[in-house]
Image (cartoon, rainbow, N blue to C red; front, side, top):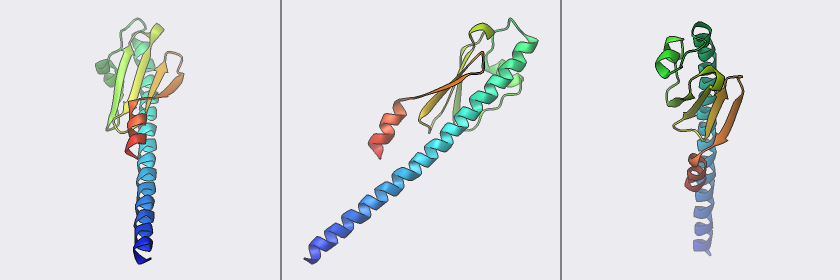
Length: 123
């Protein structure tokens, strides 16, 4: 009888630790995603500053930085299309679960990536 109680106790503690671990990881994912979203908004603002001076220009990361952009640690910014008429900038955090995209009209879209599946499997 004591072994059954002890086994049940150990399983209960293990399950509790797993739940706490996953909820902590999800909070960190949310913070990482918030950084990536904030950075894509900031990148859009700096892109608009660049296009005021160079309406026919081709935006790249160097020009974006000159316009005042500074990314957060762990965030990856990619300029997919650098002309104003088809502007597309993407952002993701190395520890996040979403990719954020902004377009020339300021619209922001988000989508998941492979990290979603890996996170679920690891939890």
